Structures are given as structure tokens and as C-alpha cells.
Image 1 (cartoon, rainbow, N blue to C red):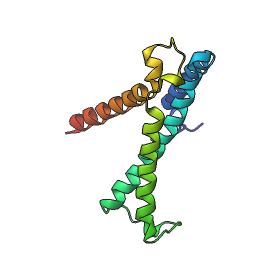
Image 2: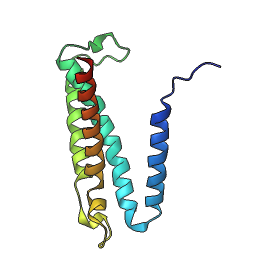
Image 3: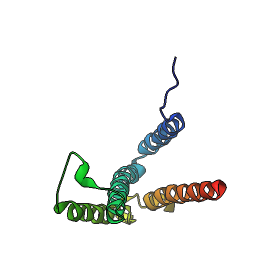
Image 4: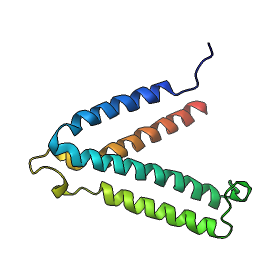
Length: 136
């Protein structure tokens, strides 16, 4: 039997977090928070993807003319608009709105999207920095 290259730890983490999301989803007051977090997560991933594409394109580290989908002179404009739109939508979804949660909801429910995604960004940044220091 060959070793699998599947990221087992990441899969286990996602399954556990999704299970917690399901438990919160059983609470009527947390449904809006779960929906906002799921939607915000999708826009965050899209912003990261389009942002990295835009960065590598502007830095000259990526030549999209060699790919299967060629947009010609429109490629950079479409990439920039996609990035800006996804960042706008992420901020729009993550913005705390008191009417989206139950009147007696805890503060963390109102700030769930920025707190969780900001925590993920912070932990990831620390990991990258520590790994870079360790390799030097």
C-alpha cells in the first residue's frame, strides 16, 4: 500500500470545525453567523487567489500568455477588478451588523467572521515568519 499525499491533518481540522459549525447552526440565534462565516470564507479564498495572481502578474513572476485561457490585454484589468470586488464583498460580509444576530447574542457572534478569519491570517503569518527564521 502506498502512502497517501492527502493532507490528513488539514482534512481532520476542517471536519472538526465543520462539525462545530453544525452544532452552532442548531442554535437559531447563530444561523446568520454561520451563513456569514461560510460566505465570508468563500470570498476570502477568492480574494487570496485573485490577489496572489495579481501580485505575481505585476511582479513579472507569472506569464499568463502560456496558459490555456488567454485574455490578452484584458487579463490584468479582469484580474484587478476581480481582486477589488472580492475584497469589497469580503469586507461587506464580515462587517458586524447587529440586526443579523439575535438581540441577546454574545459579542463574539457579532464579530465571528473578522475574528476567525483574522485569527487564521495571524496564525498563518506567524507560522510563515517562524519557519523563515528557522531556515536562516
